[in-house]
Length: 139
Image (cartoon, rainbow, N blue to C red):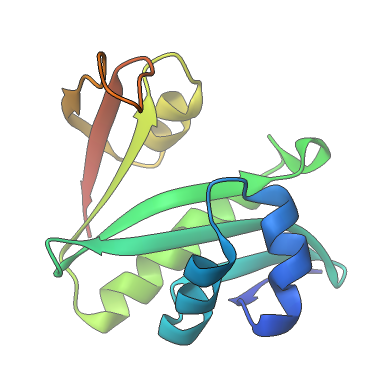
C-alpha cells in the first residue's frame, strides 16, 4: 500500500543512501522541521521528498527521488499532490520547484500544472551544470 510520512531519525541510513546532496546535519533539520517525507509501498521505503521555504515564505520542492523501478507508475504524482495539499492546508498560495533543462522532470511538473518562470545559469561557478529552470504552481 502506498504511503507518505514525515521522515524520522530511523530513516537516516536509507535517506542518506538515496539523497547524495543532503548531509547528516541537514537531514536532522529536515526531520526536526518536518520538511522531509519518506515514500513507501507495502511498508518498504521507495523514495524521499524534501522542501525548503524560499524567502522564508514560499514552499520550494528541492527533491523528489524514487527508486528506478517505481518511476512512471504514479508514485511521484501522488507524492507531489500530497505535498501540495499539505502546503495548501498550511495556508500557502503557491509552490515552487526547479529542475535542470536537460532532465525529463520538467515534463512531469508541467503535467501537474507547473509553469516555467525563469532560469539561472551557474556556469563559471563551483556549481557548474546545465541551466536550472524554475517552475511555479498556484495552489
